[in-house]
Image (cartoon, rainbow over all chains, first blue to last red; front, side, top):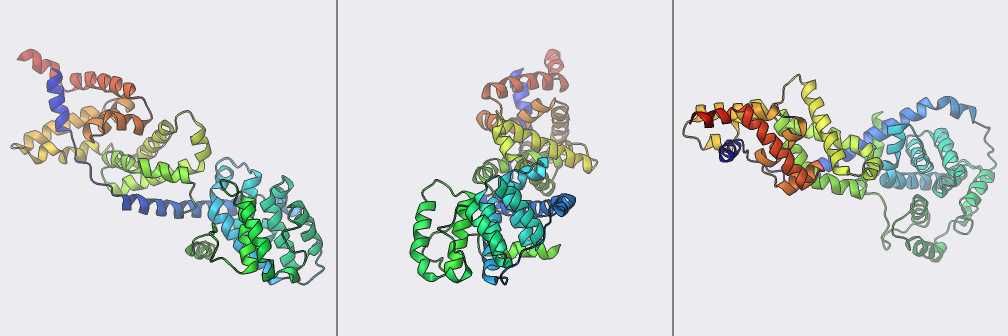
Length: 234
Length: 172
């Protein structure tokens, strides 16, 4: 009797159509794009919904220096790095509407890249308030870019980066290469990079203008373009 | 670098093919199967830390894939395509001397398989129809090998009855 059923089941056997590795890779790339778009739109949507809270926290800017374009550029490259590495940390936020400090750093970076500077600042403040060094680092660059040095100084200290980051734009200098290499050595001690470490790593080579000799976890060349495409598509 | 967590990527690489094979059988074509599995992996991504925190991530992921596939079939207002399409693609049919008779037999086998409870259905489809080993089937579904064997045993009893095999035997 068993033999009969086995015989019948054997007739139900199908040839599995092959599923080559290249298909899996293609699917992974497709998933990455779909997820990036969902994260991106989810982040902007979340920020829209939180607008009342953000507006309530607005305070007048204290611009005491001219805006500094270089810091804006460094901030953007830092944001791209964070987004490239840690976008998945927005998962909890978008799934449960629950924002963890590490998610706040990423959310701020997404918003910065979407040209929502005020929103970005708000979420970084949230992250930095919970001792997220990466968020404090972003705030430092953000305020330096706007010429708000007093506030920049506050976040520089909060991030514990006094010795690593220039107090004034004039201090950015290629001569600081040795110091940068020391920093990189220190940062690379751990198994993996924390968002804060990643942030500093991205910041330093941008500021000092070297990337080639050091194996940095920078985003792929096409990633910024993709992010910009997504922003532009909105 | 796609920006996806390494463990998520590894999981995707390990199980995607099996998920697509199963969903393809359920939905009747690869395109829909890919879409259902993509959606499942999107769901998994957004709860990834919770998935890893569960006692059995494979079982969790399998439930998500199953759910998404069935959703996809419902959205298309279809009964499981396994009855409609798989019956035409069996190895036996291609080699049959009597294709019509073989097709009828295949149809009734698949009808019976589709009528099985979910877990029994999955074990029979993965193990018997798609040819995954007991070990692979257990891994894909996130159950033990013993679980696969006992589920298959129960499924066989049901199929036996559903296909009228006992009566056939008795008449002989």
